[in-house]
Image (cartoon, rainbow, N blue to C red; front, side, top):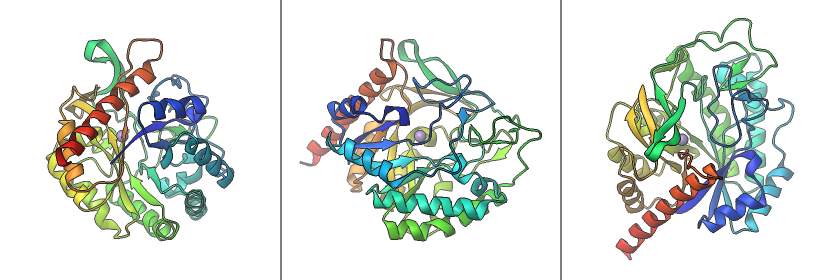
Length: 358
Ligand SMILES: [Mn+2]
């Protein structure tokens, strides 16, 4: 098991690479989607939450991530002893019609295959994705965490429809509307996921790139009147069973799983890690379940995080743990302090389980 840090696109620089190395990280999970581009209420100082009009503008549909750019990031991180373990999230501009089953679906599937080939060629072994129409809409921000630290939570369902022109939190067009996203049933959404798997997993396998699915955040059966795929822990098994390819993996988000209303998180962690399906772990703690929960400091929520690390270790999990969202700590660098606090806890947890066996 390795310690890693997730970095947003604007953080892919020496300063943040040094910060990760100093905290004891060996790996990075990087975001290439710019969530903060022309965002209204969204600032780049913390995880994006945004309002009903989305986080910001999606990228350029004609510009896929270039292999040279990917190699450059791999090289620059490597100079600090850091491996790029994964890229997290596709840009809606590149694959919106895969999610929406729209008229450019064939072209957008080809976009994803092209991206996978480039990512594989750059030596990056994984891409995390979130097969979701609404994305992470419906969360609120407040001084919810210990000592009044600012954190994110959910305070009741949000089913306001999504205006057309937006998918997965981001605007594809300058102006939204008229009209709203066409209706979709859960069966149709699972069918779209299966089409996606069938079209891209063979290429992913060839290129040595795993595709790791994030569960729904927040894990409600519907958000903004759209269905969700993985909103209970057993639905991850349905996703695994959908496609036998070894490239079909999980971006295992402990926080989202703990927010689900059913199941025993320790048993599911045992099962999914035993099956060798966890590509990487979002290490985050939370108090409560949907539709009312709050994100917490890593040592302060409902999950016994050390017990999770013990289960992963026992099952020979070799992948990366990254802090997911962390509460913002009161100081001049709230994001950094929150991350450093989580990383310190995680490093101690890894040392504790290794010593136990050594
Ligand atoms: Mn997560």
